[in-house]
Image 1 (cartoon, rainbow, N blue to C red):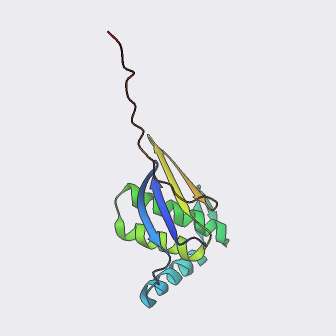
Image 2: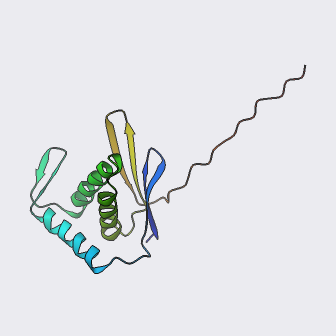
Image 3: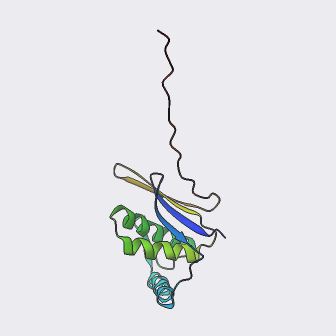
Length: 128
């Protein structure tokens, strides 16, 4: 299990969640209510799923997380990230890529987030 999950948008870290910090009882109850709400069914990609499996739930929550990040809804981003961290102990990253009106979401289990390092190019020196 990784100690943290990073939610990134176009390669930039937007949310970092530390699994070492325990959830309060109130937070844990909220996550359980999220699961209970999904027990009545969810809609993924325009299709109604009456009995969502854990993978369906993860995709549904990740879609809500992406929406929260894109609309700067910090409370929803925190709740959905907490849900994914708690329910998917091997999850390391949620990569959100937005290009124009297209949004893709990848759940990454095998690679820690690495901050991009700027590369500084130096113009070649010209002899006069």
